Length: 330
Image (tube, rainbow, N blue to C red; front, side):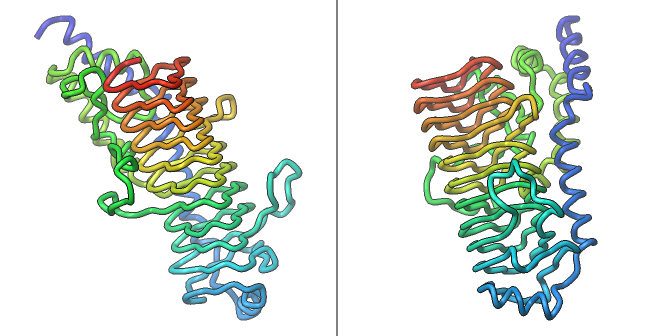
């Protein structure tokens, strides 16, 4: 083994152990724990609550499987259907003036969902298997958790499963051989080291150890929408993690993807864009009909104007517009 290769494996190990490399897993763990806490806080609907819900045009497959929080108000739920086991916390104690819509559930169908405090759900025809975080808004959108092998209506909806860090992005060589794992916190420096040492056993060992540890937590993210998220007119959001504060407005589809966001860098998917098996880091914008598949967009990058991106790593500050990028570092 050469000294340079040995140094590369050590550098990869140091980068993977950096505190900021765990922000996705930490976020998933916090939101998963919150969902489990709500299960303990809520109780089956009372006879009076059921009466009021029915009077407001709501239907439930089995009222004993509808669990309600201490602040739940039946007057905030109208014309909706509940299937399976649903947990509803109800509106926040005080409605915030900055909110886009008042909290409540209107003309929506929910199945096996956990809806946190202060959430607004309007005209959602299908919401299956998701935890929706506090103060989020979801309107006219389909959010579903289903087996990844379950067939979808269009081939473009399929990409590599970005929530599984053992999956690979074939960035750099279209036929393979310079692969990158789906690590949500990937940096350009880490990607460079991995790509420059594709066959080194020590480098591969470091990556395998890291991705194996991440995999158990990552799969929990299949069914999580964080706090303060805004999702409107998204035709399909399937098996994807959406972190706090993300904006999805008019997206065509988002499947098997990870969307990271931050207060100082809001991520946005808008204007008919489509994502299949994609990681978007903070402050990324995908808009105006862009299609991204099996790729990783680093912080501050983006795609627009009908761009087509597949098996790529897009560096921060780089925006692909009106063109095509395949199996590339950009």
